[in-house]
Length: 235
Image (cartoon, rainbow, N blue to C red):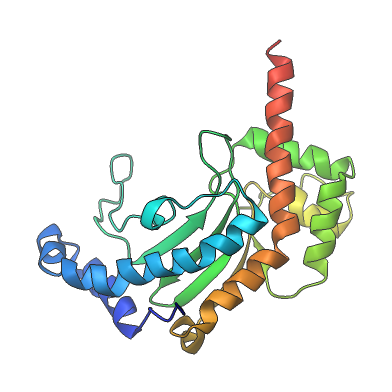
């Protein structure tokens, strides 16, 4: 089945639901949520999962994409912002959390302003980022492959939180762009609604994920390296 499930109605629902920010309103319009948001997200996951699993067989989205699709409710327990609902949704393909500690993912996000997709970490721990820096400075083979893949393309941009003060001023700029980051991911943002609402979306996402595979492989390698170091340190 070709995917083409998102529509202007999808974006309108996300916006209107967020503006009402009411559980009662959401329950009254839950059928719209299922039709306009949840069902097309599940269809997208179903189309993407086989391609993503070719990139990493340890990735599994679960029944009906349950593991991959975000919740529309926000977790407000530890946040000053008590807004109940998100105005965006995402899918995230990653390994079983029981297998790894810090997990990179391939992801897709949809909102009123368009869509984004890419690869990276969600809130990586400082120890993991230090491991990444060590591998970069050591000339790690998988890092070199990731860097070369990124330098051959102009689709994805490096994103994340950068240190306020330079920590590696003597390193080449192509390395500093990684070394100076507190968090890191690679993303393409687009307001091409014609593609967003068409079957062409899945092909675009798959091509992008394939391009980012060397980056994903390096990130997995970094976590495996961190785990080995911790195990050695605990003995």
